[in-house]
Image 1: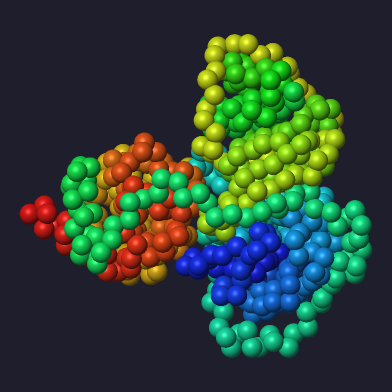
Image 2 (image 1 turned 45 degrees about the vertical axis):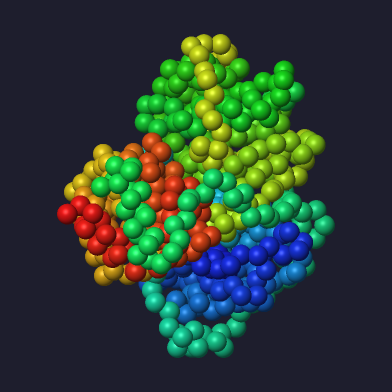
Length: 259
Length: 324
């Protein structure tokens, strides 16, 4: 079966100092670490496992700047057979809709049985690209998958639904599945593994290559500005060395009936 | 004066709390003299439609055996014709698993912009504008939908708006038929609840919760010891379950268990809204995290910014000493 997996390179902000750029629409990126979006890692792993079980190909696609090639190299090292890099400064501020349009155009001409996306990206956190892409491709979609098997022309997907429940659904292929975290255990990628795929050719497509111009390049949602959240009430931060802070905390817990 | 549509989420036989939170949002957006409508989809939803009519001006009830299980594709196919003819200025969905499954596809079918996971909504002229969080909750973004004749959609975070009061009756219920040629390509086989765990954390008074900051399974011992010292149950955030270090039955959050403790000690947890959404009843919330910018400090009562590998053993020792 032929599988397409859509991925994104995102900054890792777990412990980063965050600074908003002067234009108010970007983060100052100088000191940030970047990685493949966590959810996309599960999508790549799912794609490669299905290929290993059923044969076929895996093609990774990203929409991103020059550096985003790193994400594609990682997918190739995990077992993808080919990669497409949609790269154009005109797509730099793309909203989920325009990103989905670009992905659809890039997929055009590549027959597929299944498209896999991460359920959400840790930066923009919309979780829209997968569902929008499915609708644009005219295929069914199941979001937030925690289990995935393929039997003939049907995908058996387990996904998270209302009230903390999970539902198993059958979806006719071709179709699209978005991967929830925990779908599988993504394989380890060594530096050596990345080096091995360093020379693999990656197809680069500009917006013009995809026939994107004029109205087709319009976003549906405009980012007006980023801001740091209002301080709000916030926690009382206990200062001093560890022993002092802990002693105060024990006193607080005593007052609140936690001891 | 605008007409607003809310898509109702149901859990089991009842309406989700989001139905009444979105009513507040819808009334605000509708303005004086505006109208708020709800759409409810399922099989045997008559009672739910009547309940919604206690708060909404009109209720569109899609009642059909083919809608027995919520289904993002089927629900989108059903709602699209209503949106096409309804003249709604805004269509609101909850940012729940159901909303996440339904909204993106529906927005493409309906040809309208979609704002995700909004904390606040307002009009910017004729355009729907929202405030949302990005970058793991550390940054707020103001987003504006392209203004169009067809309106705009938004999914709304749980708890972002207070639930509206609603009464016994009032609005008109209209039966809606599924469109001709309704043929979703996905079908539910069965709905399953996660396996029950060895302990029911939803009933625990004292909880120690551990998150990604613990770094490795073998480090869990120190939080187990802290929990033991406090007489608390151990629970966790999603990454710990994803890695298989603790069972799903110990995961607190919107995709896990909802808890109502008196005291909640969050260790190495950044505080995503999905995690915080599972903590109810306003416990005394303690946060221990080395990242001073972690969103957990925005909701905690008291916090220690520090290395959990130093703070947790010191706290355990201090608790044991205080108790002895």
